[in-house]
Image: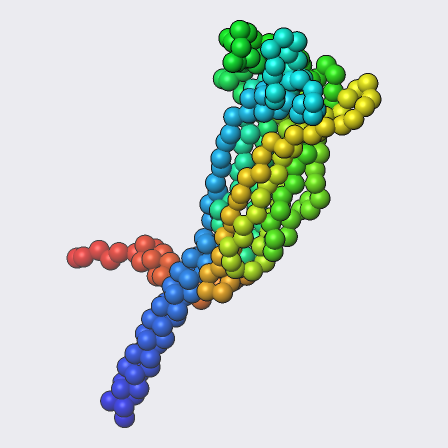
Length: 269
């Protein structure tokens, strides 16, 4: 009878050891997978940027047809159209990848380039006046300058979706932001547009000049069929669940350590 009881006791101990081992392995597996999901869901998306210098001649009022100006200079009585006097730099930043269902920012900035700030001039070539320079009038003296931007990106939720406009002031930067959110996995290609609109202060006909139309490409991705929000949610829940499963073994281990430290040592006689 005692042997049978010992056998049953050993069998129970083996079962409990296997159960604890299974719990530890399950907790570790859930915790590792959940942390991977959480890390992927929180990891910053990759981004790209490109920058272009903008000279005053590229930010100049277009010359009316039949008039004389920088676009068609002629010797004798040459006339230059007003232009933005400072050299500027155009910088476009956008995410190269976005988790499906997440949102990110596309940013377009037109700022003064202090390193390239040159006095705007135009050179008349092909005649006796070759090498002479003609100062370009400051457009801020006669016009209100508006920077207008929009983004075309089919299949992606964009906010704001309409064209945006800001006043371009002397020495001041203008920045445009768009929130883009692809819902499905895929590669999305689009264009970011920026133009200047010149409004005469004394009245008269408006004019505009297209500054840039830059192509962008954004890839929407997922992990095991999960977008950003589901991955973060499952990762957070799994991390808590794995911790709870392994919490009992952790408490027993800590309690055993404490008991060993508190147990009084017997003196040998």
